[in-house]
Amino acid sequence: MTAALEAAGLTRRFGGLAAVSDVSLALSVGELHAVIGPNGAGKSTLANLLSGELAPSAGAVRLGGQDVTGWPAWRRALGGIGRSFQKANILRELTVLENARLAAQARGFTPGRWLRRAARDAGPVSGARAALARAGLAPWEDAVAATLSHGQLRLLEIAMALATGPRVLLLDEPLAGVGPEEGERLAALLKELSRDHALLLIEHDMDVVFAVADTLTVMVDGRVLERGPPARIRASAAVRDAYLGHEAA
Image (cartoon, rainbow, N blue to C red; front, side, top):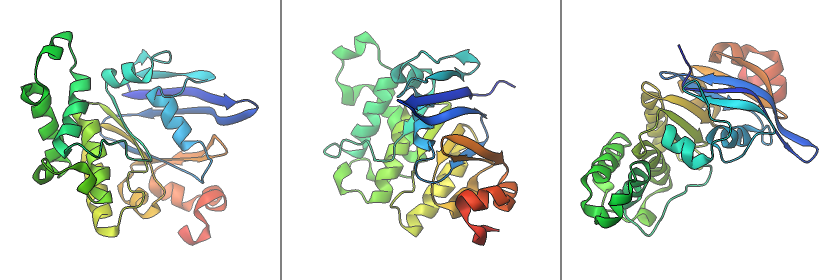
């Protein structure tokens, strides 16, 4: 089966520093693949290489088997990659529905849509509402985004990614700063989304990671230290020494 998204030998250098060095991985629909490691390990840089925010110094990216290494981020998004960032990328003065609708419009843009009133364009509005419902935000569609809790803002960013109709989701620390109750809801959503998406999760909350991930890739100093199912990663002496600590055994 062709992977939804593949990286082959990805490397990104900044001057003499290799932030990512010879990283390969494959993401498949139905799998939640978590990337973990200490700060500065290259996790976010890897996500930027996969999404097209950064161009690689070497290596290749394939989306559904097609080489997209030279594609910019907007073209990869249209090809089916949804992305969230460490800091929520939300227009706080707009409503929840307006934020999701803008994301849906970006996916389905055609020149003729310039002539329509956005709020009455049924396609993007329908897609936005479906995404909000899946993220559990339907009751807040008319709320101004600035009034949401931090956890709800993280959910809104995921809903905005969903509104673009992606096959692949790249989520960078979606639980950062989220309290325990909202974190449980987010973790359940991530697991549910992995059923019909290829999902890459970058996260520092190890309780969540080991609860929801099917596969873990551990990065240290820009390289892959180890990859495997959660039980094997937890038992790895090399991973404990480099990142988890011996209390994780």
